[in-house]
Image (tube, rainbow, N blue to C red; front, side, top):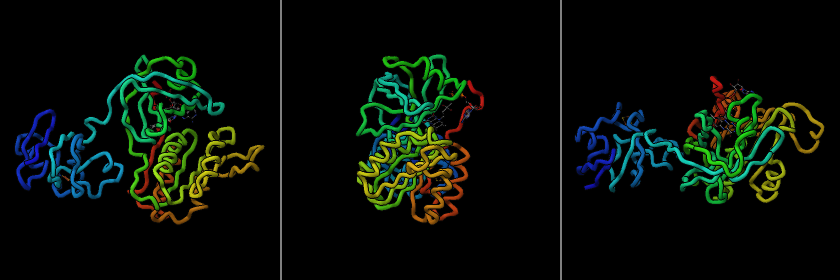
Length: 328
Ligand SMILES: Cc1cc2nc3c(=O)[nH]c(=O)nc-3n(C[C@H](O)[C@H](O)[C@H](O)COP(=O)(O)OP(=O)(O)OC[C@H]3O[C@@H](n4cnc5c(N)ncnc54)[C@H](O)[C@@H]3O)c2cc1C
Ligand code: FES
């Protein structure tokens, strides 16, 4: 008889009983609606113990990989510790600033070493806290098994509260507070032949740099196309590193794009917006897995266009870099 632990209390589950029925029978209130695995109102996450596959049917594979499941159709095969979806997503911890360097005129690369083990996936994001409580989200460009530190790419916005503080006042050796990881914009192994399209603008390259290297390291064999866009060639970065990866991997194709023509347009940079260049090169996106990161308008428009070009919504992962409206 499996035991379900919820909020530190153990509850014995009877034969044929679901996690929802077990907890409800013991007087624990869990939100539910359809009770047939459709609406996802009862979404929970297994902290210990794996949920059965039947309880994860229809969930995005990024959620499955994080052991999310529907409590109403989960007949546990083993003891499980469970939490409501969202209840434990993040925790606050300290990290030491290990390095700060320029990726181009506007973008800084920050390396952070968390004080405790930090379990994350390349492409997720963290929240970075300033000592006075200002907080902003930054994507993780690092890959857990390859990189010792967490890597952030921070674009310095003129007058930006956090980004100018990072430029002027955050130094190697300092300790900062971070929270996370958050988000489902990451690579999930299991379909190594599936073609992958990565489209990012500006520092939208940060999560894609992580996802790309993670996919290649995990032996992804399908084509991987990366379209990275910027307002001009000066806004592009990691160009040499990406070209080196393209040389090393037959299945990786890199297309740097700039909205405005620059002096070095003949150096292999496409003079077109990244999303438009991607759609022109790949008009049929049926069966593709797609990652869209960066400017919220690009992400929104490209998501719709990718769907119209045949991609399934469950195969589209997005990270719109929504700016704070309050600027504080
Ligand atoms: C999930 C997620 C992931 C993110 N990942 C990254 C990342 O990897 N790297 C990164 O640099 N940022 C990322 N961001 C954006 C980041 O969280 C901050 O919003 C950004 O750094 C600006 O913060 P700030 O405090 O410097 O500026 P704020 O003080 O918040 O000022 C921002 C203000 O600048 C103005 N503004 C908006 N866009 C522009 C623009 N393009 N140019 C000039 N001014 C503008 C707007 O008025 C806005 O209110 C991410 C956001 C989200 C939601
Ligand atoms: S209550 Fe609808 S999926 Fe569980």
